[in-house]
Image (tube, rainbow, N blue to C red):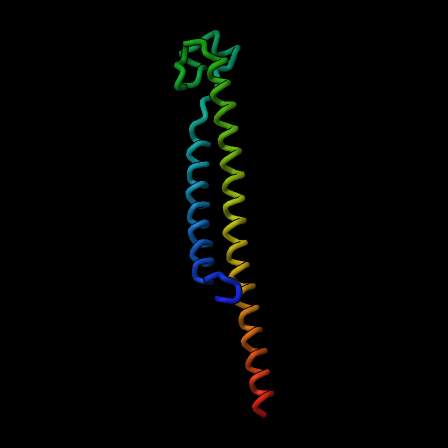
Length: 123
């Protein structure tokens, strides 16, 4: 598309690649969501850590509630950022596809005007 200095196939390909990237981000977000490490309950976990405390990366009896809470806070923040990245990547993909459609429509309108002008000059 010389008039717009943009190749519609490039726009469409970019849109598809961004859509694929959004899918990867979504999968990553799901993976991060599955890495939560619940902190042991302060009451039941303290009384009988072997029975009531959850199995975590920080152990059942290490007493690392603060570390576990900090990890969970960070993990939740990463998940939230991935959700934003996923949304903005999807939005960018749709925007590029829309731009390609608009350019194509404008290009077709220009061609029709040129044909009408050429026909009018010949007739």
